[in-house]
Length: 196
Ligand code: MN
Image (tube, rainbow, N blue to C red; front, side, top):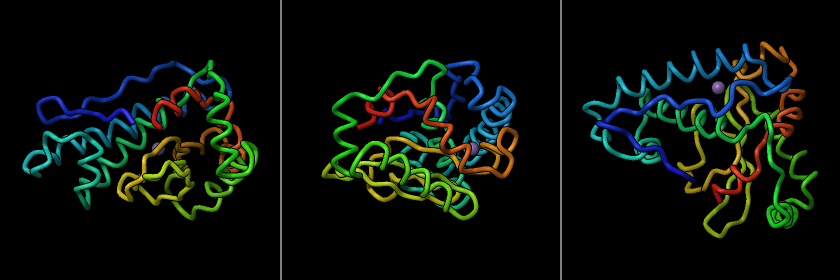
């Protein structure tokens, strides 16, 4: 995972690496999700960092060492950065070696996708479903509530789908499973694999 470094104790707002994601996530959702929700998390993180003793650490370390409001905002900045960066309007496919790794861990790529969608669909309330690698490079799927990130459990996060309602309500309303199954169309696999 490429970590995110502060500059003079402040984290910069990420720039989206695309302007649109076809029909999978509308421009309107991107505009609110990136421009309003993520911006608010970045602003609140930067307000709460001074005096915390965590000012010059990489973002994943802030997430590991903080709690309360600072944790919530730091976690959401890390989560959203990984979420937005893993998508592309022209995504590149999964490598044969990563497909084999998924098959070793979950039976098949299709079985992995089904299990990942199921974990996202059954997470109660707001949160994130994650694919991560443990210290032995075994792959695991976890449900993380609210702002949690698998780095707090010693895992290496690879792929995430945001299941907060703000991520899908404008496009899919209450149909979270339809949103989850549509996201595979825009996952840029080389980005995901580069985090391993
Ligand atoms: Mn979100």
